[in-house]
Length: 247
Image (cartoon, rainbow, N blue to C red):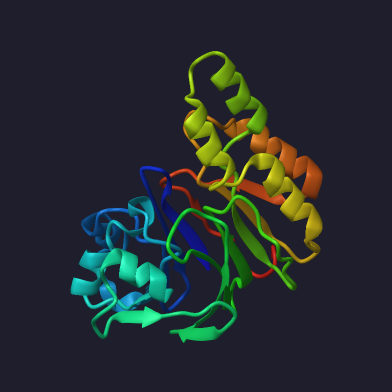
């Protein structure tokens, strides 16, 4: 399995889980022609696309994907908010239920974000094992068993945004929205500490804010805390060893 990151920011989010035989698209927040290009125009490989919520940086390319014949998996509230609640390509997921998308088995869980019905996902495949995908949530009340790979939001540092507010470089209302809609590096680290990481191969820090994060420090801190291989989700990054084990 390899993980191909097409975008991981407020400008657009999209991740390709490429197994030997097929691809799962996770988030559809770029223009669909860009996603199609990254797929080498071979849409026959695509098992489906799962979307966490309706905000455009996660759903911008959904209409194009549907037109191209790709099934879109999201909650009922997200489909309504995207205007995709009708049509045979729109598949409804419910928190806590498992769904088969090609060779991938997915299960959604509720998250804390300012959207209609947002979710995170547990994604399972024989090549990458069980993957936690958690973004756009200011915390999670859950712990997760048997994780092999993790993609988790580390959007901002609270100390950094407090300093920017005091210097007049960040409006206080933007600070308040961050605190109640996105995950800080501190909360990210708390979440990692609460889970059994013994079988985890890769930790990928996703959706870092351009102005409110410090990628090198975040990576270093999580490496020191966990002893795991840690990546920053930069657009264009391909993680070749996105497998169940490191060997």
